[in-house]
Structures are given as C-alpha cells and as structure tokens.
Amino acid sequence: MRIYDQIVTSSQQGRKLLAILLDPDKVEENHLEHMFNRIANSGVDMIFVGGSSVEEKMTDNLVLKIREYSELPVVLFPGNYEQISVHADAILFLSLISGRNPEYLIEQQIKAVPHLQKSNLEIIPTGYILIDGGKETAVQRVSETKPISAQNVEEISQTAVAGMYLGKKLIYLEAGSGAATPVLPEVIKSVKKALNIPLIVGGGIRSKSSLAKAYENGADLVVIGTAFEENVEFLEKIVNNEHIC
Image (cartoon, rainbow, N blue to C red):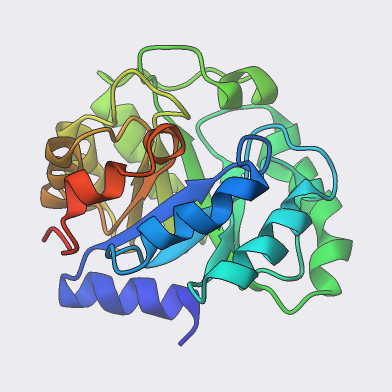
C-alpha cells in the first residue's frame, strides 16, 4: 500500500499513526542499531528523515543505513531539495504555507523537480504550517519566516484550509524541533474540524499525555523527533507497545 493511502485509510478507520523523525545532522550511525531495537514492536508506523539544515549526501547515507536495520517505510521530510534520497519510499512535498518567503513556498520545490523526476518516490503534496512553540526553532531561522501565534487559532485554521483548497493532500502542524510546548489541543481540534484531508502534528511531544491529547483532538499522525533523539527509551514510556486511540 502506498504511504498516502495508508494514512488516509488509517484516518478513515480511526487508527492513529506514529512516526519517528530522524535528523541526518544529529543521528550517530553507530547508535542506529540500538535505536531500531527500541523502535521494533513499539507501534511506530514509519520513519521520517530530514532536518532544517543538512549537508549534501547525509540524507542519502542515513536512509541507506536505516534500510539495514528496519523494514518500516521511510518518508523524506526535507528542509531543502538537496535532502532528496531516491532510496526512500516517499517524500512530503512541503510548502511552508504559514510563511511568505517564496524560497520555501515554491522555489525549493522547483529545484527539487529534476531530482524527483529521476526517482520512483511517492510524492505527497503537504501544506506545512509553523506554529509558535515557545522558542525560536531551526525552521524559523533557516526559512526566515515567523511562526503563527499559537493563540491565533482562526488564522491557523484558515491557513490549513487554504492549503487544502490549493490541493495539498496533507496538512502538517509543526511547533518546531525542540519546541518548548507542543501544538495546543484547541488548535489541533479546530484545524481537524475544518479539514477533510489527514492531519499530521509534530514538535514538542515529550510525554504520553501530550501524545494522547494530539490524537484525541484530531491528529491522524503524530511525529516525535527531539524527545526520541535525546532518549531512545522514550517510546517505551509513552506507547507501551500499543497505539493510543
């Protein structure tokens, strides 16, 4: 089954999905085997790979290493067109619709086209919305855009709907890597109510409670990054080998 079909089908069935985000710039290859021993049988559905600023070839190298330790689908979550790897299964073709910098609305996407045309990657158009998570994030610095205030629920919801009307197949609400606070439950709930496409939520998920709140308020897929990077036992603490529904 294609990645997007899996996400849609799971959303329709009320089955919540979980992804681990690995940043090629932060992951140490000699820790990968231990990481994937922890990921195995933990309820993780897919691996996201990407970062705000990653050296060329690092993404490709990490994807190939992941293939040695796991059969989970690998989905690219690229910060720029240089983070494309033909060895992954799919790519979230991101457009930073919360910002107004053309480089991340369309320019990076154009630069990616020659690479994507030579690949067999499943391309999933995704509207990416950066929300203030209480601290400046790498995404904010690199993209030179401002996140939307977490209190401005109406603007966030309208931005998500605009993305859907533009033809995005997924909406990704992001508090940013290492966010002090996750996307607020009321924001997730409002956005989910306004959409008829699946919703991804990431950034600042550091407890079983915050994971459960994201799911309960409408997230179809939750992405955990920094918390897992800092402590590979984190999955066992929050998931207990079962999906939270």
